[in-house]
Amino acid sequence: MDRLSFNAMAAINEDRYIRQQLSNDIANVTTAGFKQTYEATIQPHQAVGEGFDSRLQPRLYTTDRVRLDAGPLMVTGRDLDVSMNHKTVLGVTGNDGKLAFTRRGDLRINTSGVLETGSGHIVQSQDGGPITMPVGSRINITNTGLIYASDPTQQGIPQEQLVGTLMLRDASTTNLIKREDGLFRVDEKPVGTDFATGPEPVSLTPQALEGSSVNPMASMVKLIEQSRSFEHQVRMIKESKSNDESGASMMKAS
Image (cartoon, rainbow, N blue to C red; front, side):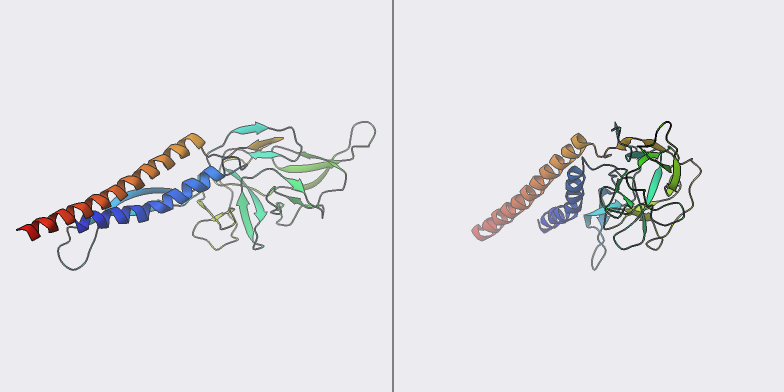
């Protein structure tokens, strides 16, 4: 019965990572541009050691690459909101001061007049620097990432001036993984590494936001399944203990 208890405990230990990721996904159901990354499955693994190689135990196999599947499009009408189309990602400055990427498009102007995301990460321009916005101007962001500013008090047709270009990259042929601050970086490359844009054209949907790609119903069902699996494994351990006690009693009686 020790094998039964051992395998049940191993399954509980491996499943905890899946439960943590499901909880994180559910917590980000309303986060703009949030992307799921973690995929995991439990598979039998042969335990190798002294004696016969006949014991199998559950082991967690994972991948942690960003899935850039499009989330729901939400039209806001706000000039600084953008939704990235297809596999387009936006270059920003991470908490460590290095280049990172995101799908979060709820942009804003901070107190220094610099363009940043809703999470406070400074947006990078195509040439790699921050984008400074004219004070009191009206902003127009095109579907190719060009940023124009105009004076709202100007009489007649406002004259727009180009103030910057968003750093946009097509990640359709590049594997991205998440950093500790939730931003993306290139897989198997040093932190802060840029990458060549892919074959697909980069584009935005102005005055709109991309919702989280998390399906709340599917995540809740998976979380319930994890809870049932935990209860089942605990029950297996209890039954194993009961069987051992019964066997010990029979041996004493004999």
